[in-house]
Length: 136
Length: 136
Length: 136
Length: 136
Image (cartoon, rainbow over all chains, first blue to last red; front, top):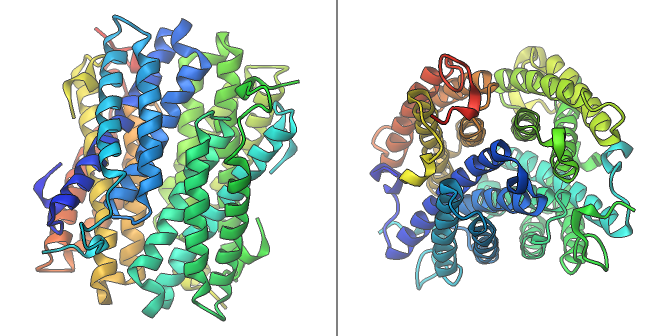
């Protein structure tokens, strides 16, 4: 992410939002790639529940990113849902020991889950709950 | 929605999923249209929190639709979040009395919220929790 | 789609836009379902290029729907791309003779491709190119 | 983007795809933020055609990113459309001289447009047109 993206963001809380949005985009990205990887591998890699989790994860991550970038006051349920799906996706990827793509996917899912859990408790705009208007 | 879309869906529970997905798509559709309507109207129609709710609503509805169409066992938090956002969006649209587009948007948001609340308690695939495989 | 969705749309051209957006949403819906169907079936159903086409189709249909619902003057390249991807997806589904889900998917893809091809030549708002403001 | 994301990508061409996908995600991100910025600013910032361009840009960038991450052979029309929309969005942002967020948005849109124009001529998987399978 380049500096300019944060031109109008000022508080520590806003930074947490933007960082989590960035993590969610990275997680969406690697899930989309991992789906293709699994299709190439075939066999247990295309087991329906594994593939569905990666699809769910990519989708909820995308939504999480945009809720956070809008500093949405309604982000809490979305980031909590994202943390849950990311953790389950990581566990599903863990089953493929020795597969570098699955390992990278699990690692990113766990980073995203941790970031989402952190912001799921926060209100946008900091203690004042001021929302997107939090330009200093 | 045409019959063919349900070719591989069999149970009453699956029907609830598909119907709610369809409601969520309708709600996404009208929110996208309503955002443009409000931009045309200007004034209080482009108040940031109102516009943000319609964006949030369109986004979470889209995600809800795909989770349900995949019969995702992780749909519960997503449909619950969708119900909350839809209800808030409806309330925000209610403020514009006499505006037919806002009235239609509020009505659809409430239909979607009700449908989401209903399925938020369900497991995919019926009592057995069998997931997408529930073709009879 | 309910009447209220079109509360602020007046011309025949706007109707074509809204109808095509609805077709694109239906096509996204059946592609998302068909991906899960193919994962359940396994074998040649999860061949990477087939699965990728259905993912591409779901994604470009979603984007097409929102461009049209915004009456975007930039819709032309998007609807043209959508028509191409839908046609290729239909051809890929055709290979699975006797599979009702694939047949339904191919049929919907062709309906969407035809609708997209029709509007790809149009400007929003009709002959005057008036954009979204085209309420009579 | 972290190294792990490219674990299964080998050729220079794949790198161009992944880099452009990353640029498209950055562009989506800043457009989503910029929409909120403009709603806060009001006035000419919420002019419908300007707001619509930022929405169109965010949406086509998201689609472009996923097509490229899937190494989709059908990416060409999508990346070409993305380049066009990004360029128009940049021009629309240019009108707000002295606005740091609009300047950052215009800059990112131009970076994304340039990256998209470059890959719009490429086939996935390099000279051999081998697609996603291009692991060395």
